[in-house]
Amino acid sequence: MASAFPESRHAPDSAFAPPPGREEILRAFCDVRRHTEALAAPLTPEDQVVQSMPDTSPTKWHLAHTTWFFETFLLKPFYSDYQEFNALYAYLFNSYYEGIGPFHDRPRRGMISRPTVDEVAIYRSSIDERMKRLIEDADRNIWPKLCDLIVLGLNHEQQHQELLLTDIKHVLFQNPMAPAYRSDLAAPGQGNAPPLTWQSYKEGLYEIGHDGFGFHFDNECPRHKRYSAAYSLASRLVTNAEYLDFVEDDGYRRPDHWLSDGWNEVNNDGWRHPLYWRKQDDGTWAEFTLGGLKSLDLHAPVSHLSYYEADAYARWAGKRLPTEAEWEVAAAGTPIDGNMLESDYLHPVAHDDLKRSPIGLRQLFGDVWEWTSSSYAPYPSFKPAAGTVGEYNGKFMCDQYVLKGASCVTSASHARVTYRNFFPAPAQWQFTGLRLADDG
Ligand SMILES: [Fe+2]
Image 1 (cartoon, helix red, strand yellow):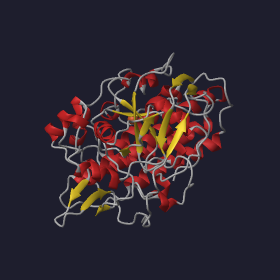
Image 2 (image 1 turned 90 degrees about the vertical axis):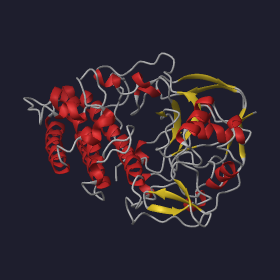
Image 3 (image 1 turned 180 degrees about the vertical axis):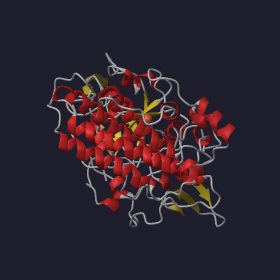
């Protein structure tokens, strides 16, 4: 498992906090890199090369691309006399950095049978050895800059760890045999969803965004003021039972609940229920999970909803989605605690299973990312990180929505209240759900 993260000063040029020491960085580097390989270990080589749709990437690509990140942004500029591992890898494993050079088409990543899974493992270990030497030997003058980039690379790899799991879930789901990613996942107990209550928040001028102390992505800055009218948030996430009421009330057949683009998706793609739900011959519902096909746990949070589905449910329920500011103001100061990767369920679970706090807002972190109604847009006076890594976030600030919290496959050390995840409105393959909001 990934250890707690060293506090890099990122974004670069920040005047806060001294850089962490070399041992701390080395430990974090080894932990994160090993953990990615542990996530891939239950998979066969055949599993690792499949791309099930343009949005997903093969496991092998994730393993190679995260390695390319360290080779490109650390070794090439900072390792003296660095010899590129393989010049063609830059083309194959660059994701979208125009400033670095041309790259292979994303929807065609599954057509790449070479390098093999074994050759990618050799690539990883070669880059790891040189990264360890760089961490141990780098000149003191460049250490702060290196730290910023290494910690960015580790957070980047944690994002890909989550994608590796959500992508392989989608891959395995295509198989009529419904194979499990792992058959030894932790088994949740028979928890019940607690009664839904409402927490109220006063009208006011609030601050959101990162204060610049400790690691953060550039899209979380600057911290700034937002006005909110009085509002309320549901104490917990929407459950499968509640969402099933929507499905059985012909929620997917009544256009009055849906945004126009969402209704087009319903009709064009035949949406009738959440992506991984299956109605059994006996009339009960099952759900495909990373542990294979399981009975639908009616008390667990509903997951794998697109923005359109989350929004339609909220309309049907007579409520709405929260804005990102409403969510962040309410979550401020809450411990980062919940059903995340370390719980090893790799699936949302009924809240009581985890014996969490019985009061206040529950499930803010873990289980599912929570859709907000906020477009993914730059905060006022947003500046992308300097250099080519500035392509990391800023250029995607169009046609996507912000999600808050964390999911059951997010590392706890990767979650924070100011985190801004983002996906396009039709996306269903991430662990995405909702918490209801209301005015007043
Ligand atoms: Fe990436």
